[in-house]
Amino acid sequence: GDGACGPTVSEIQLIDFEDGNLVGNVDDTNAVRPWVIGSTGKCNGSNNGITAGKDATSAGGVDTETTWTITAPTGSTAMSYYYSYPSALDRGDDFHVSVNGVEVKTYEEGAGASCSAECISLSGGDVVEIKCKSGGLNEICSVDQIRFHG
Image 1 (cartoon, rainbow, N blue to C red):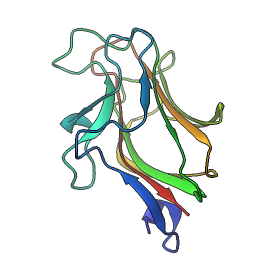
Image 2 (cartoon, one colour; image 1 turned 135 degrees about the horizontal axis):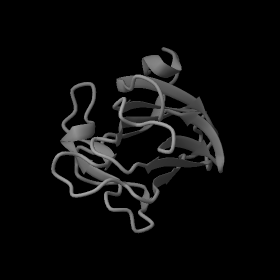
Image 3 (tube, rainbow, N blue to C red; image 1 turned 90 degrees about the vertical axis):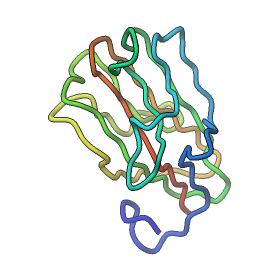
Image 4 (tube, helix red, strand yellow; image 1 turned 135 degrees about the vertical axis):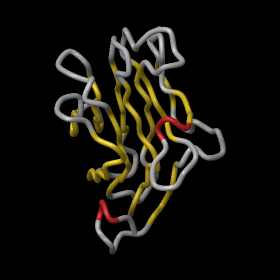
């Protein structure tokens, strides 16, 4: 199992982005920097994660929202993941995780995070959305090693 969801849960699916497959669906709503696979968001020994927002190589931030969506596989009871964001994210920016349209986690304020572990409860068939909106330099949302547990 994964420590974020406790030691007794079994893993149904791991999405680690190592194969270059984004898996879910990205609705970039014309964002300048939508969710992409890259080494910026990597955590816990992996090579790739997914990142949205302005980094040193991009010309602009996410000046509109970009959302990555995936449906939880049958039998799921929880989802764990690692998330990172810099302190540059602040009020007016968004880094939100929602299940079936209900916001369950928000990360865009405070000192930031580097590969922090999170676990959320959900059910098979639930729709998970991870949303990023930023406008300035180094305002980045990153996620890696998404695990569905049952």
